[in-house]
Amino acid sequence: MAGVAERLFATFKLDAAKQQALLRLRLRLLRRQFEREPGQMVGFLVFLVIFGPLVLLVATASGFAYVAAPDPWPVQVMGIVLSVLWLIWIVLPLLAFRTNEGLDLSRLLVTIRHAARLGGEHAARHALRRPQLCDAPLFSGHAGRLV
Image 1 (spheres, one colour):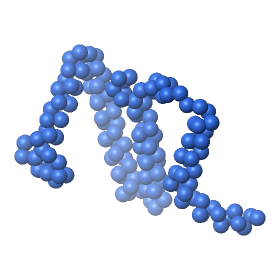
Image 2 (cartoon, rainbow, N blue to C red; image 1 turned 30 degrees about the vertical axis):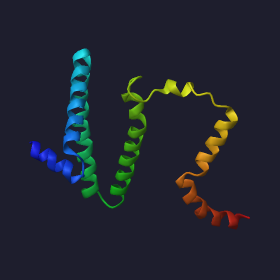
Image 3 (tube, rainbow, N blue to C red; image 1 turned 30 degrees about the horizontal axis):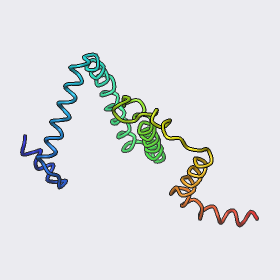
């Protein structure tokens, strides 16, 4: 089994010894967390029992829709799947982390920012987003015809 892991890490040009040490450390921390709070292990197992088959069922159904559905449906299903994955990507970090582990929303209150500075940062950030930069040339032709 060690040879398989070393070949896998070598495929991605990673140092196998460091990666194995990091994985052992992560497993040790996970075991300690479950030893300290045994209820989390029960919750984790319930999560796996409920959501594991659900994820497999959704993956199988969407794969079947990609292959066997009539013409417009594979694209529609892919759009729905990607939208749901995007929502999960946005919401999951808010639900998964504890206060000292990662995403701590109370840290946002520590930095004092003035309203004018926040407004300027917000406007600059949204003016330079890639979708707006790509949409501006597309819609500029329509704006010229309206005038």
